[in-house]
Length: 128
Image (tube, rainbow, N blue to C red; front, side, top):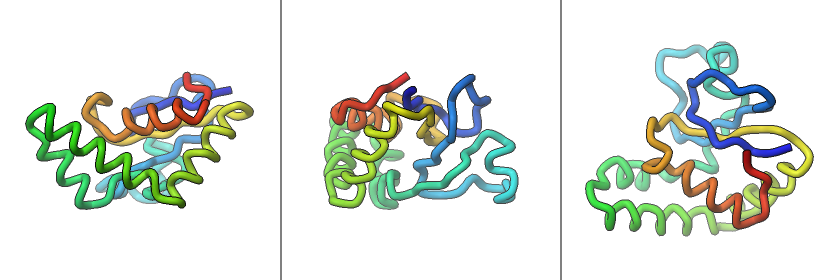
């Protein structure tokens, strides 16, 4: 049992389980009924996405220092009570279920999902 960190819209892997979309915006041009069938996500959960302001900062981060500043700000957002409890819940569920969380970004190293991976690992989640 584990959590996979995935790129939304890519083919699902065996035993990936329920795919959770941790994105601020829904995919464009895709009807709601097609999200799961086209491997976007089964459940949309924007509460684990950066705020709109931080998405803008992440996209504009041109230097390693700017990216690190985004990471610090996103970690601060995820340290608020509701996201913190959600991360604790997902970490606990990872010991008994297969599921995945993801975003659209092509490069995980420059995506908030890399930070989610770290936050889940810090909570003892079982990661694939």
